[in-house]
Amino acid sequence: MRKHSLIFVSIMLVFFYCGKSNNGTKTISETDAGTDPVISKSDEKNHIDNKSGREEKKGFEIKSAGFVGKAFENNDLQADVKLSIPSDDIELKFRWFINDNLAEQTESDLLPKINFKQGDWVFYKVRIISNGKKSDEMKSNYVRILGTTPILNLVPVPAISIPGEFKYKINASLPGSVPDEEDEDSILDDNSVQNKNLEFSLISPTDLGISIDSSSGEIVWNITESTASSIKDSIEIKFKVSNPSGGSVTSSIKLQFKSHETDKAPTKKKEGI
Image 1 (tube, rainbow, N blue to C red):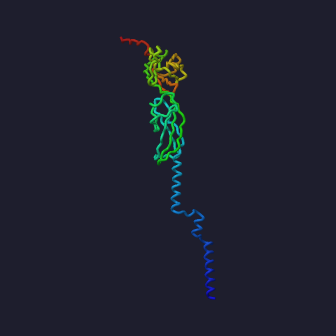
Image 2: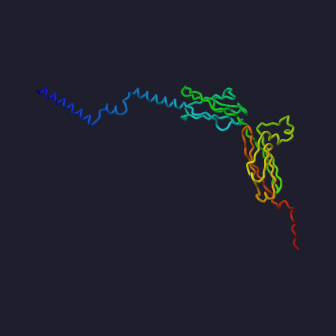
Image 3: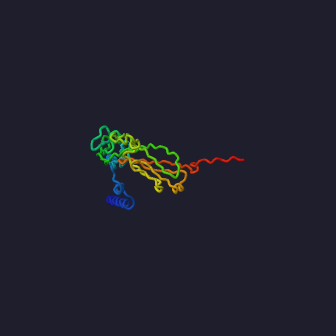
């Protein structure tokens, strides 16, 4: 009888503690089941490796492939590649194409100007190399090589008298330009040689009757009495010289005006008696 009583008490104690655990605290297994699962060390390492692999793969992505600035024949051509994640631990390999032909020995992001000329069409293909792995190549857009920027050789302007007519020829040329042997006028007139195939335009002032010949670069200004009375001792004429195939340059000349008094003959001073 006593033995049965001890068994009964033991059973009751088990139920008591189980009920307390359910009502008050949670067991370790319950806590783990409600939040993060328990993982082994090997599983944890695989999880970290997989995460690193995803980040590395994401770093391989090339977002865009373009160019730095405009493509002029007198400048090297620079590639502009943007990645999804910037990194210094990767290598970029380039293949340049000129008029759809592969340019040899040009695997960097720079295509030297010696490789192309005005009018050529250029593009490149780029890929990422990291830890022995290669990404897919991305192709840039085509870019057309523009002409060179004109070079100016401006002659200083002496002071001028007003009113009157003012003329000035803008001397400009393209690098490496030479006279046309079949054009005798170009050989005889150095300005014609320099200004050939260029375009000239006035920037300012545009309200005083100043004109520029768009093909020769000659500035003509008929300064009337009314115009002379409205301006001060000097004025700046701004203009633009353009290569129709590419670059352009802006510049100006400054005009100093002689006073009206200096144009008159000096008056002899009377001596005192």
